[in-house]
Each structure stands twice: as C-alpha cells, then as structure tokens.
Image (cartoon, rainbow, N blue to C red; front, top):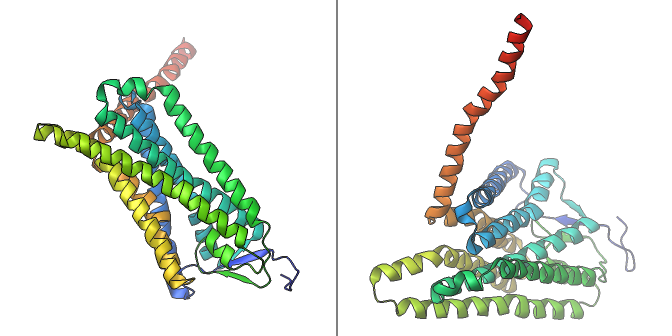
Amino acid sequence: MELGNDTEISEFLLLGFSEEPELQPLIFGLFLSIYLITVFGNLLIILAVSSDAHLHTPMYFFLSNLSFVDICFTSTTIPKMLWNIQTQNQIITYAGCITQIYFFLLSAVLDIFLLTVMAYDRFVAICHPLHYMVIMNPRLCFLLVLVSWTISVLNSLLQSLILLQLSFCTVVKIPDFFCDLSQITQLACSDTFLNNMVMYLVVVLLGGGPLASILYSYSKIVSCIYRISSAQGKYKAFSTCASHLSVVSLFFCTSLGVYLSSAATHISHSSATASVMYTVVTPMLNPFIYSLRNKDIKGALKRFFVMARLKRPIIQDLEKCPRVQISKSQSQ
C-alpha cells in the first residue's frame, strides 16, 4: 500500500470490536451462531409461506420478501467479519468495501420500504376489511415490491458512485466490523460536502418519509381499533399488526440509537457495538417475532414437517419397488 497526498488507497482496515486475541474465538462463535440462526429462521419463514396455500396473501408475500432481504442484510457484513477473524487479517480491499457499502445500503433501504408497505397493508386490512382483497390485489403487491427494489438500487448506486470520487491520503482504519458509509466519508481527505448533503437528503427522504408513513398508518389503525365496540374485536385487530409493530419499533429505535450514539462519540468502537443492534440483532429476531406471535406461520411449519415425514416412507417404498420387479424378472 503506497501512501501520499495523491496516491490511491487500495485497502482499508476493519478494526472490528476488539483487537485482543483471546476474545476473537468468542466473537467468532457468537456471530457464527447469530448468522446461522438468522439465515435458518428467515429461510423457515420463506419456506412456510411458499409451501402453504393459506399463506398466499399480501401480508405474507411482503413478509417473505422481508425475510429474504434480512438474509442478504446479514450476509453483506457477517461472513466477511468471520473470515477476517479466522484468517487474523483485518484488510478489506477498496473494491470490496465499495461493494459491501452498495449491498448494505440496498438491503437497509429495502428493509425500510418493505416495513412501510407492510404497515399500509395492515392499515387496509383493519380499516377497510371488506375491500382488502380488491385494494391489495396481486398486481399492486408486485408493483409495491418492484418500486421498493428500484428506489433502493438507484439510491445505492448513486451513493456508491459519489463515494468513488473521494480520495484517502492515509491508512484508513474503520472502527467497525463492516464498511459504514458515514465513517468512510469522515475518513476521506478530500471535500465531502456533496457526499454529506446526499446522505442527509437520503436520510430525510428514504428514512423520514417511510417513518412518517408508518406513523400515519398506525394512527389510522389505532383510530379504527378504538371504534370497535367489542373487546374481543379490538384484541383480534391489534394482534394482526402486533408483530409488525414490534419489528418496526426494534428496527427504527436501534437505527436511531446507533446514529445518535455515533454522533455523540464520533468514531469509536462503541459505534461498532451499537450498529450490531440493527444490522445483526434485528434480522435475527424477526423470525422469532413473527413465528412466536403468529399462529398461521406456526401452523404452516407444522403442516410442512408433518407432510415431510409422511412423504419419506412413501418415497422409500417407491425406491424399493423397481428393485423388487427387477429381481423377479431376473429370477424368471
């Protein structure tokens, strides 16, 4: 790596959580377990939704998309961190860092948009139940997901291209376990005015806008639930959006906490610890929140595993049948 005022930096250093060697096996085991739980849990939700016809509804269509994005979200950061710990190498290439930032932003913004779409879905289901299937038709559901993907891809592409214009004059040490856009921008030695303006604009439009939409949807939902006369009806209406409300609160509260803490402490290892909450913990907890509080998901998984058990002996019998016929023909 050559250093100088006009030279290009080809590598960055990811400092992670701790540089103490005795803590590395513990960190490796912890995050490997979290990653496997996240992938397995979200895959189970995708499997349950795709295999059960009763779950082919708008809400579970959005939920399966959210589970897929959460797998991508964690896969963007954790495997590289585990590889660095295993090889005892903190280096990430410049191209690798830009790629990680691109997919991280893509997954994060997609998470926000899908949570917003799911809030609108719950608003229609509770406030307009008789027109739910007409409003939330397959064409609209597909269009909402397509628009979410399009905006997320364009945002990631824009911020990655602007980031490519920055230059770095010294060894860039990132006090985190992944390449964070705000930290990379702060460590640049060139003018970052345009980058900061775009970041703030994106936070307001793609962060504040969806959050305002979610709050508006839930204000309408609360108003509709309040007008329900029976206590059982109120409980049933609230239970349909309790899981989504829990995920929304967890994601936005942890994200806000991370950026407030990073703004207060500037750049330090504490920001790495705080960022774990919304980049690692939230995607891991989503399957538990939706499965533990959702009878439909639990029922679909039970039916799937029961059918898998029933099909196993049938398949084994079918495999034996040709062998029996062949042996009989040979004996004759």
